[in-house]
Length: 281
Image (cartoon, helix red, strand yellow):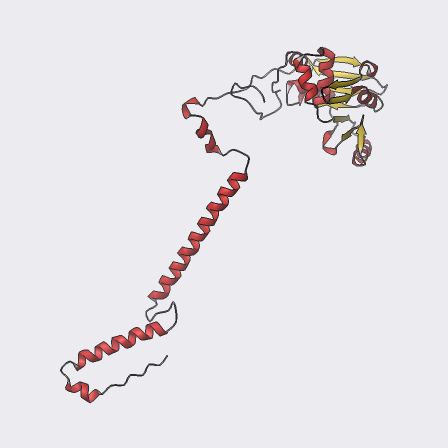
């Protein structure tokens, strides 16, 4: 920008304070030049740096506020407790270390019980109805297939306990799906593929659907499978042989804990959920 200044130099020269007047005009021109060079830019560059710093500070503050708001919203939607939540309900002096009681596995010595499908009928408890005979008939027709998990525990407790026993009734009420296990030899990969295709097409046993995640394929022996269960009560399986016989195979500690209603971790799992007394949840 150009700035024009008109002045009467001879007249100013005659004034005693002409030099002071000229210096004042020069300062005025310099300040106007700084203002007219554009926003954020001054003659010495200091104003531009200050503006950049202010903009950066405001932008950083906006980011921090946004992150804090996002964290609070996500914290409200996140069901998992945060590490510091424990101090809201429990004092530091009340914290103590707990650990589960481990029971030795005896998978090298197993109990084998012959199950006759004709001895089992449709089991009813409240609104729960389980076609046990149909389930065992299906296993008998498919050699080296069987049940594990909840359905195996249920059949074991039906064998060892009487109706009305709280442990048995609780197992019946807690039934929700079928867990299959298929024992294969190393050269029977084709049978595994065929079984997967059957499940994908929609397998149903006794009117209960079987999902792909509910089927375990194993090339291990029965003792190895039982030794790798997570809980002592899960050290049992129901499996058939090539003659159509159905067997309940379990460890001794599984038998004892199923009868007494004890839930304890086996040697295989590394992590388990405990209550305040060290019992497995």
